[in-house]
Length: 413
Ligand code: LLP
Image (cartoon, rainbow, N blue to C red):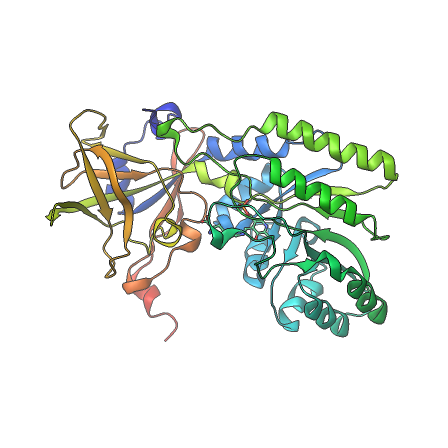
């Protein structure tokens, strides 16, 4: 069995229990080295001067993390005016940001347009709305190539059953609307879905979009979307996405297209999860253990208000158990359900998994929690969202977001 915290020296000289004592439980703990490594890996995916990476900040939009990723040279994609706002606070400039929105008002589009940020619209009606409000300007359109991929039906965004993008058969309508308002379509983009572990579907989507690109005469960039997976089952030996071959294949396709078509274009990808997921372990405490009709329940403070992925998608996260600051690896093992403190039976973090026997006062570490962890957390049941801390490259620990307070719960009243 592989233990992530050991392989990576995740905690450096810091101890899980000391971190919880100092910052409260539960706690998102990030490791700066891992974050920077992943940013560098994806940035060097394709060795071409016109290949860029935009980090999709919906995965994690902590201000400090955004600043580190900017230092690493990543651009960003935003999904809402709020994401644009936070990106600006983190120092991103208009040309660093791509607004890939879905079903927004003219006012929200204006928030981006006023700042000179490129907008991608994802339906004919949104294109018309954009044209009515911002005639004679540049815009990007999100296409749906009919290809989808992803770890759960809820996160497959391309294909014939999803709400995203404009079907390829509607291209003539796109041109009609853009002529009507004198719009210049300078970008096309797509995102087939989240979390693929083999590059096949992504590359198929790339080929499809490149073919479609030939119909667009004013293109300045093509964005192929994100979805790059990470191995959530490392303890079972799951291997990472094979990036070297993937990058070479992508480079081959892009350079062929470029030389055949003699077009000067920026190519982009838009990963979220890959950049941040593995940089964080979520820590929580065990407060109860019970046996209900032969099911063992481990009761923790890791409810779905803190991490919703398992409850929402049935997602797997590897678990580590710490006792007196030591990783518990030894037998005996038992099959357990790890639950949180939310008043719903669906509040399950882990279902029937063989883990070393867990006792009250043990600490639970949830691996690979950096993507869609904090960013999907909530105040459900009036629970405080946890603090986030960063273990820096020199081993020191920085509080990068305070834990909510009771005051935060009433600040809107
Ligand atoms: N670009 C667009 C337009 C997207 O909609 C997304 C994710 C991404 C990029 C980044 O995808 P990534 O590289 O992170 O897979 N909450 C789910 C994932 C939802 C993804 C939504 N869109 C989860 O926890 O698995």
